[in-house]
Length: 502
Image 1 (tube, rainbow, N blue to C red):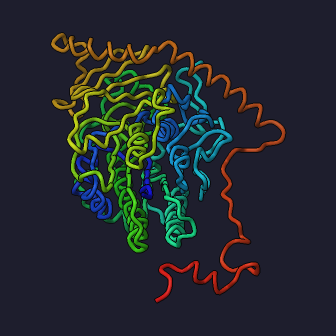
Image 2 (cartoon, rainbow, N blue to C red):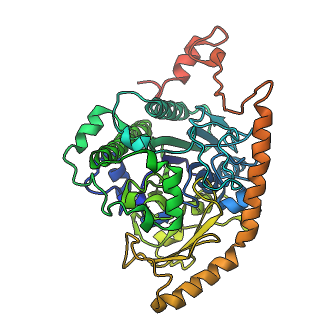
Image 3 (cartoon, one colour):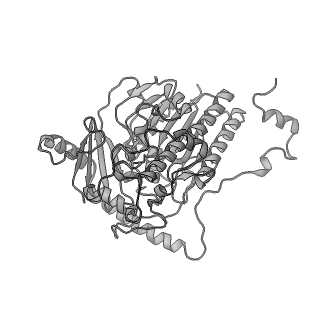
C-alpha cells in the first residue's frame, strides 16, 4: 500500500491563544476554519522554544534545543541530526520545502530533496548572542519597538514578497506532483514568515478589522518595575526606553497582525484548492513555530514562556484521526513521531534520542500524563530558562531568576505567580523535582556559552577576505523547463497536462 502524502503548512509567530478550537470566531479565516472542521485540533500545543530557529529545529527533529544545539537564531543546525524529512525520504518519500525554516550553517536542506525558495533570514552566525555581556543590545538585529510604532498598511513589503512566492512555488509544486512524473509519495512543507512582525498588512485585509473588538490586549501593560526578571530583560532587549507606545500604536499593530492572519488564510486556501482541483489526497498539518505576545502585559514578539509567546496552533487532518478537540498539552516536538506513525515509518534507530511522543492516540481517546518541556537560551536571556506544562500547571526555572508557578485553569492570563504561596508548596516542589531531574542548568549554561564563543570567532573570521555565504540558492534547470529542442513536443504537451485528454 502506498504511504500517504503529507502537506505541512507552517506559519511564523502565530499566537495559539487565538486558536482556542481552530481560528477564533471573530478572525476572518474561512479556509483555516474549514481545515479545522476536519482536523484533530490540539488546543494546548506549545513550541519547544519560543524563537524561530530553535523552535523550527526542534519541530523538525523531535528534540529540544539542549539536544540539537540550536539554542538561538544563529546556532548551527548540524547535518548529522535526522529530521522528519530524512526519515520520510529514507522510507521512499520525495521531500520538498517551500519557504522559511531558518537553517543556520552550510547544510540548507536537512533532508529535503528539493528547496524551492531561499530563506528570508541569513544562514550565518551573525545573530549570535553573547552571555559574556549580559544586557548588551545588538541594535542591527535585535527586535525593537519600531515594529509597533511603524505598524500600518502597505501593498508590498519584504515579507509579503517572500510569502507571495512561497505560496506560488508550493502551488506549482503540487501541480507538478499531480502530473505523475514521480510515483513516490510526497511530503511538501510550505513555511510562511507571516504574521511575524513588522506589523504591516495589505489594505484589503487591514479593512476587515476596522471595527474589531480585539484591538487592545486583555491585560494592560504592567510597569517595568512590576515585570518578572525575564520580562524586564525582554523589555530591555526590545529597547523600550527609546519608544513611547500609545494605544493607537497598539491598535494598529494588532490590527495588522490580525489582517496578516487573513492574508495567510488566503494563501493557504490557494494551496488547499490546488490539492482539491488535482484530486490529490494528503495528510494536512498546520502549526506555528511560536507565538507573539501582542502587547499583553506590555510584552511583544516572543522569547517568553507566557501563553501568547509559547502556545501555538496545531491541527492535523488525516484519515486515521477523528476530527475534534484535544485539550491535553502537547508540543511541536511531538509532530515528528506522530507523522512517522501516520506514515508507517519506523523510528527505532533514533527513539532513544527523541524527546517527542506520538500524539495521534490522543485523538482516539488515549490519555497522556507526560509534561510538556520548553527551553529558551537566546537573546533577552543571560542564562537558559526551562519550563514544564503539566496538567493545569506551568513551572518556569532559571538559575538567575526566582521560580514561577502558574495555575492556567484558574489564572489563564498568568497574573499570579504562586511559587511563593505556601498553599502550593507541594506542587512547586513536585514540579521543581521533575525539572531538576530533566535539566542540569549549569551544564546547559556551559554548553550555550561554549557554542556562542565558538561562533563569534568563526563569524568574524569568515567576514574577512573572501566571503562565501551559506544562504540557499534555489536551482532551476532552465534547459528542462517548458519547451526545449531536446524534447518531443507532442509527448511534452501531454505529459505536462493535468488531467490528460478530454
